[in-house]
Amino acid sequence: METLFTETEIQQAVSKVARTLNADYQDQHVLVIGVATGAIVFLSDLMRQLQMPVHLELVRAKSYRGTAVRPGELNIDLWGLTEDDIRGRQVLLVDDIFDTGRTVEALSKRLLQHGARDVKTVVFLEKPDRRETEMLPDYVGLRIPDRFVVGYGLDYDGRMRNLPYIAAMDEEESS
Ligand code: IMP
Ligand code: MG
Image 1 (spheres, rainbow, N blue to C red):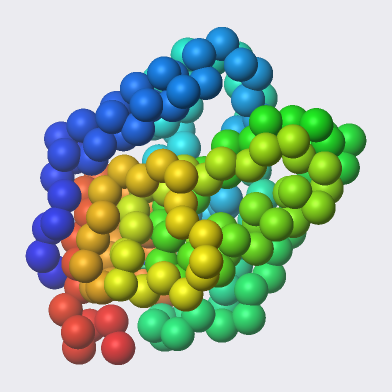
Image 2 (image 1 turned 180 degrees about the vertical axis):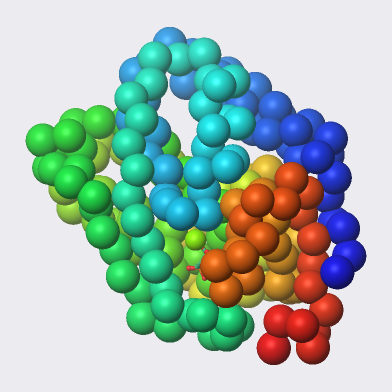
């Protein structure tokens, strides 16, 4: 494994995203929706630097890819979040990574269907070379090449989410 970003580099990138969000949203009320499981580490760092009034909710997305590079069928669970919670709200959807973009795109559409006034997306990592969607993430922490990464919430087959740094796995390790 090769370390791509150290803890210090990660915190600098989180702070930069937070500063941009604070400037863009000022004192507007925001509904922050994190995508479990992977986003919770980034989310917990990010939200403590947000200065606008926020509500926090979590939804769950699983793409059943296991260890495969190709994403499988996407399963979204709103985890009890109702249309009443979403309707008319200014939403910030927070995820760990924008890979093909299908997860973030599907969730954004779902939130808009449920009446959100506006949905902006915040991802810690983006792999621009892998994108399969029309949409682009609105806020990005760090852009990375097309490599499989772990740590800071991101897993390999359920493991290594707890690494405080982000590492890229070798081809043979992740295939
Ligand atoms: P999507 O392809 O953008 O829909 O991403 C789906 C999900 O795949 C992400 O939320 C991550 O959980 C996972 N994923 C994508 N790329 C990586 C990676 O490099 N490491 C770990 N998980 C990843
Ligand atoms: Mg995920």
